Every structure is written in structure tokens, then in C-alpha cells.
Image 1 (cartoon, protein in one colour):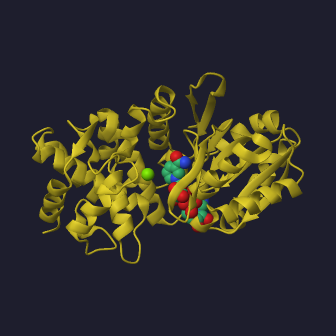
Image 2 (image 1 turned 90 degrees about the horizontal axis):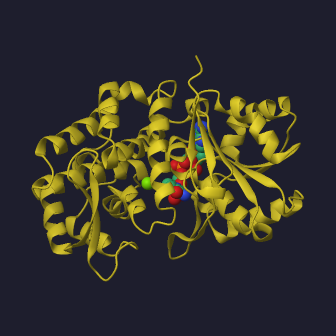
Length: 365
Ligand code: NAD
Ligand code: MG
């Protein structure tokens, strides 16, 4: 009956569980009581507080945990030194002590900011992630990367700090705008494309019906299981974890060039299609696979072609320049994640910017 799944992230004495599905919050509440005791400081933003803080408070109170909320404004601007300072002060004000565990209740912004604050507050305290966006449930809440942005760029100050527990309750997704669901879905399909062909088959068979929060639980669990395995193998991105960047070097360029904005996940979706098209043109991946990827993305309402991506028109030369300067690239040559087929991604270093510009020119025309 209950479709709740628990996915372990195996990291020795820093191991933790991700509890996933409709009703995961209630089901995991006793563990929150064990970890936090009778009082929990919950960091959230005003949007999530307005929609879901009452629910969370009731569920925790029924378990004997009193909720003490710290509410930040919503938005990426909170992932800043200013936002961090305000949060650390609020934690002090709330009387959070060294042995306490705080909770991050919201999207990736709240998760990244709270995780980073937890990693430095009193030289480090524990935290629990309760992600409320699809992107945060399948991606940012798992793996221990925390960060804020600096004036020079995104995520330039941060730490690795694993949570004690992650609770991904898909009931929270019912209030999420459909565009956010679709954007988060790009990171789910990414997982399948990197390393799980059978999962891609299931996503393809389910189609757009999957974007209904009532039906997305199994796909969330698949994506988390996939990410958990990679993180367990390569926590600090010395190797294989870089595969999780499939589609992302393209995506970062689109995000930087978009006029009027494009969501990260929308850009990733298009980046996935491009990585497969590039691989097929290079003769490394069957053309049918690249076609399947494009067709599925289109069916899910994501851009299978650059012309369909919001924020355009895009200029090939400018995109290629952005890719050359991506912070992940050493000395001018570009690293791309490419694929030998669906579920078989690999890391390719030394891609030439000029070839990339030609390829993009061709894709835009
Ligand atoms: P977000 O946290 O800004 O959330 C998007 C918006 O949705 C916000 O306005 C929020 O208030 C609102 N919201 C949240 N939950 C809601 C709900 N259930 N119903 C209605 N509205 C809701 O954005 P995001 O997309 O969740 O996360 C993006 C951030 O995640 C970026 O800063 C990115 O750098 C970071 N990220 C981190 C990692 C990592 O590994 N740490 C990975 C991917 C992304
Ligand atoms: Mg991403």
C-alpha cells in the first residue's frame, strides 16, 4: 500500500537514508524525534512556510517535536554572504547549540544555504534535508554539496557536509508550478541517460503522466538511488561524480546567455539532447539513441532542440565562449560528458572550442 522507499547513501560513519514518497514526512518523523529531540529549528523560506509549515509542524508535534521556524525570503539571492550571515545570526538567536541538528525545509536554495551554515556554525553541526522542489528531491538534497554564490559566480564558496537524513515527501510537490516540475524532471532523465538504460525505458513508457506528483515517486527513488551510488563511490568528485554533469556544460552556457531567463532544468534538458547529438555525430553513439532522447525530452515538454529552448535566440560563438570559460575546464580545452549510448556516459577531455562552435552553429541553423 504505502509507496515509501528508503534509499541508503553509504558513506561510512557519515551514511544516511533518503526516505522517499507520498507521506514520507509522517513516516520519518520518529527518526527526526530521535535525531533532534524535543525541539527542532526549521529553516525555510516564506513561500514554503506559507504553503507547508503548518503541515510540517503538526506532523512533528504529533511526534513530540516542537518546531521553531527561521524564515528567510525566497530566491537565489539568499545564497550569499549576506544571507549566510543573517541565518547564522538567526541560529544564534534561536539558541542553537553545538550538539543540535537543524532542518532545511525548502528548495535547493534553502538546502544549500542551510547546509553550508550547518557546516560552519560553531565549527559544524548536523542537519536534515526536507526538500520541497523536485530538483531538490532528486538532486541538491543528496550528496552533501553545500554552497553560496559570491560576486564572481555561482557556488564559489561552500563545503562538503552530508545531512543526517533526507526526507523527500512527494506530497509537497502538489503546490509546485508545472514548469518547476518539468525542470526538475530533467535531472531525473539525466540519471537514466548516464547509467541506467532500463530506467530510461520506464520513463519513456510512463511519459508525461509521470509529471503528476502523485505518480512521480518511483522515478524520484530511481534518480536518488543512482546519485547515491555515484556519491558513495566518489564523494568529492575526484572522478566518476563528474558524470552527473551530463548536459550541464551546455546548460551553464544557455543559462548565462538567456534573455529573460531560462530555468536550470530546462537548459539541462536541451544540454542532454545536445550531448547525445554530438556523440551520435562523432560516431560514438547510435543515432537511434540520440533520436530517442530527443523524442522523450520533447514528449515531456522539454526542449529537444535549441530553437525550442526559452531565452533564445542563442548565438553559437557566444555559447562556445561561455563553455570554454566554464569553471570546470582547465586551460582553455573543454571537458564534456558524452555518451556511447543510453545509460552509458563517459568523460571526454580536450574538446576544441572551434569544433564546438561549429556544432552549435549547425544545431541552431
Ligand atoms: P529554489 O529553492 O529557489 O525553489 C524554487 C522556488 O519554489 C522558490 O521560490 C521556492 O520558494 C518555491 N518552492 C519551494 N518548494 C515549493 C513547493 N513545494 N510549492 C511551491 N513553491 C515551492 O530552487 P530549486 O530549483 O529548488 O533549487 C535551485 C538551487 O539548487 C540552486 O541554487 C542550485 O545551485 C542548487 N543546486 C544544488 C545542488 C547541490 O548538489 N547542492 C544541486 C543542484 C542544484
Ligand atoms: Mg543540475
